[in-house]
Length: 93
Image (tube, rainbow, N blue to C red; front, side, top):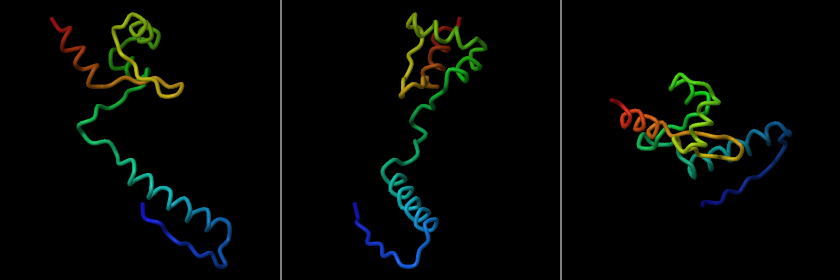
């Protein structure tokens, strides 16, 4: 990573904060580019329930019964949109 030298002269706290924030945003943008179209979109429990027209509780039951695979990030739960669409195609009659 390229190093930068910053000289601080007559800068108030807000200006310094904004400059540091700008630098961090640039670093994050380079190290974590936005997802490409090849990646599946992640849906929350509410979005998944709305997609299937069922309750949040039903989605949780489906996970417990291994009908849906969940992705846990911290305390949050997500579902891959592609997997949900594949599940629908697979179960169509």
